[in-house]
Image 1 (spheres, one colour):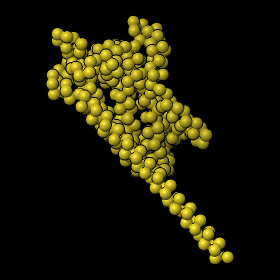
Image 2 (cartoon, one colour):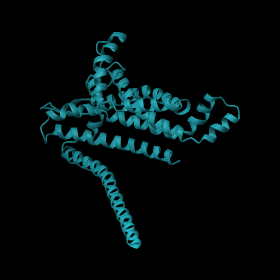
Image 3 (cartoon, helix red, strand yellow):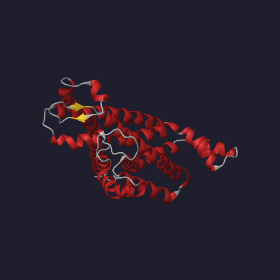
Image 4 (cartoon, helix red, strand yellow):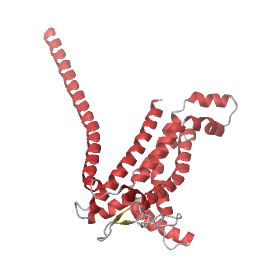
Length: 309
């Protein structure tokens, strides 16, 4: 009787271990599928936009005009022009100003969270940063349209507030949370012995931060900036709503511009499928995909190196 009970217990434990094994395998398969699906989606997106854009690239595409002409007149039936120089300038100017806004904010926040805040204060601030990153871009666009626009008109006495300044500030605030998070990781990756050695030599807290911690974390901070630049180049809705959507090479931060992403969003729904206009929009998409992919890949490699170190 006792042996039968022992056998029953052993069988029960074996069944439980078998069930756990199957559950583990199922979880592994699901995780593997999730990881592979991300790669498949990226490849699929690239194949799709490339397929749609190739008809224009191998047809009436003029490489020199495309990248050097500031004139964008795709709907002109007599002499359509497909120059994206003004849109590249608009995208670059907005992204550049956004980095001017975002870098001080994100670096300051990362230093405070990583080097000064403790306990509940640190956790609360990290949650707030994550919540800021979760705000939809259309909400930021409404802020630029309804709040920043009249403020810029009033304070700077300009006729229009939908400008590089407006979009740059909005985009900088959008990019700051993710830059803060990555920058904080970079600061935390600096070994404590660096700080302790500097303090043992009589360095103040700020001297430790500026002369020891920041130089040691420079690669991670560069990765944070690159991720912010990638966010700036790839943003659509907020930029569309805050820039004024004017094809123009800006002379100042008070000029209205048009971004590459905003052009695709605004015009794709109004073009005939298979037309040159349709093809050139997908060609812009290919260009944007490659630029953002290179920027984000570079930033990711830098950040991975920091986290492994």
